[in-house]
Image (cartoon, rainbow, N blue to C red):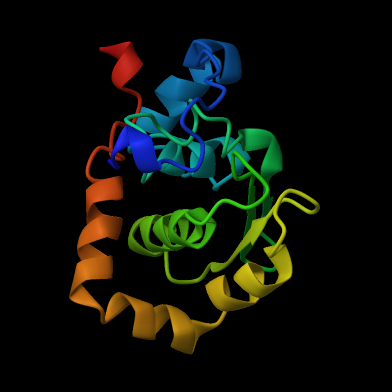
Length: 170
């Protein structure tokens, strides 16, 4: 977390996080937890993987800042592709590429290898969306970025609390 005097967006709009039971029915949650049921990935399941990623500037999650939403995730099982759009809190957010990198790393670590994942800024939501999208979806650039130990530490710090799957049930 950064010094409040140097934050780009010192007072971000924080949304109240809806009760997950309003997003996912209890029967669906039980199905997700049942190891004997073979279920396919969908947008809500992908959202569960990324919603608790910490914002690099604020002590809030990407869900709380409305940076990620299940409505901006598309899963194509036929082609094994997942597209995640995300929305930086301000149009000139310098953390947008870092947020995208955290999303990419989290999904790379969590999803089966068969999925091709595209991480992109929601159209019209960032001044440099095209350049950032190109970087985030270039395997060589991502690999080079993750070779930087300091950057990898920042990514891992953002992901450290992101494994809170279905904690609201227990």
